[in-house]
Image (cartoon, rainbow, N blue to C red; front, side, top):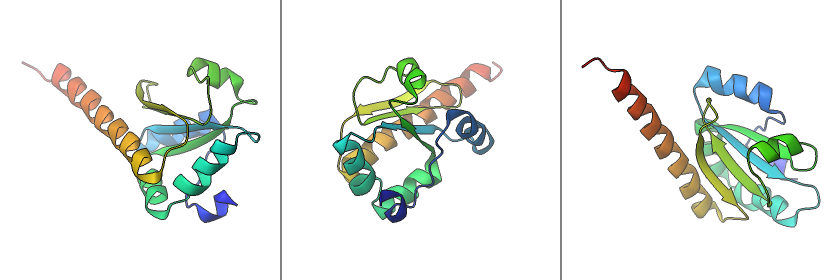
Length: 133
């Protein structure tokens, strides 16, 4: 099973994941999948099951795995229309990255790195705006 090969400890609900993200000051990595989605299983097993990527996810994000069919309200709010879907948001629900489909570990890592860069840009802009002149 993917959850056994992967070192990612998934939240399965947004509210507790958001609370964790606030306390750790980390973005939310939200993966939408479904039991009937073959590429969702492939993403989890082959990409997120890769040891270095799993460690990176656990270090830099609060990971959440949601079921597209059961969590349809969240899917609609986050504009998810195809699976597997990856949405990375900060604690204030600002979009940091979005991706649809299966990606090999290296490509997926690039997507996640871009989310971290975006988060840094947002934080830097806020810091610049709040600094006294």
